[in-house]
Image 1 (cartoon, one colour):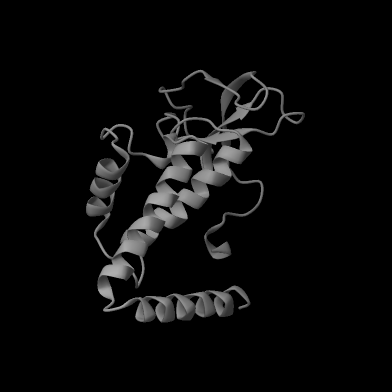
Image 2: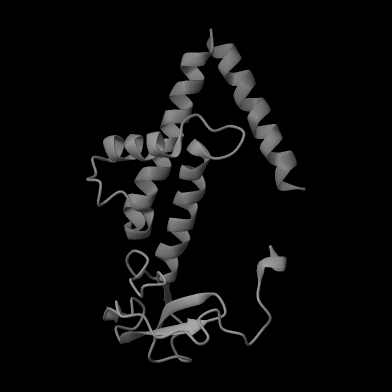
Length: 168
């Protein structure tokens, strides 16, 4: 991943005009304004009270914010929710396509198409998504097994595999 990083001090947006779609955002941490800034990774919104307040929020190349600004705690929950959700459609254990996963999320959490973006979720919605995925996996495991003994054995095997992987 480090090979994709640009040399320090170089802006990815260097020489490009400031996007026209700049929006006014309020800092979720201190309540001050956030302004569009550039970095070696592209455009982002940063609190005007920097360096006292280090809140940031991502932006599209057009200047449009990536979802809703959030506190550090909310950002951590969004990361956890994405990690859980992405397992549904990414990787070796994926059970559905990306569009099927989003359709499942919309139906399960009773969301509209516009609300089905983890970047817009609050902490409670992130927790709901993570719990819904856990329950979905648990039900699938139970339905897949002939008896409870097999369910328990598979769960123990999965726990052991996760423990081994966490030490690597």
